[in-house]
Length: 118
Image (cartoon, rainbow, N blue to C red; front, side):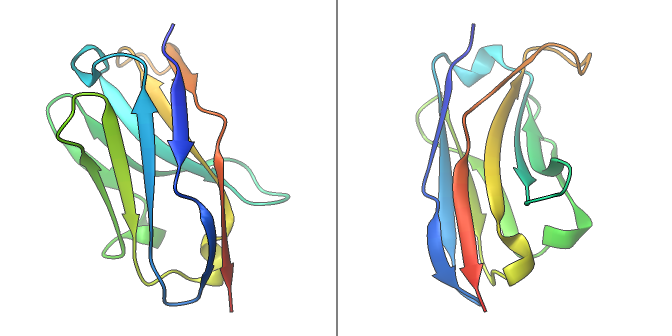
């Protein structure tokens, strides 16, 4: 079982920046995909960004050119650098670890709240 702990959320003004961190309980070398998702009140959880074991990266259109996903120097952390934040980015952000490419074998973190004030 993989345990994930997110941190770095908070309250920021529109146009500001935050960096989220996700610490996994085991090396990312054993995890095929690490992703950041978010869920705003009353909305479905959506994919924000993901990076796979081959370092291929995907971003949702809504965050392209503003958010950057990256791996840390240690083997068990993934970051989400969020710049030019908008009120629409307000949500709980979750880290997810996929152990294969099936889309059915994954673990979630508990989430971290990001609130962007306009």
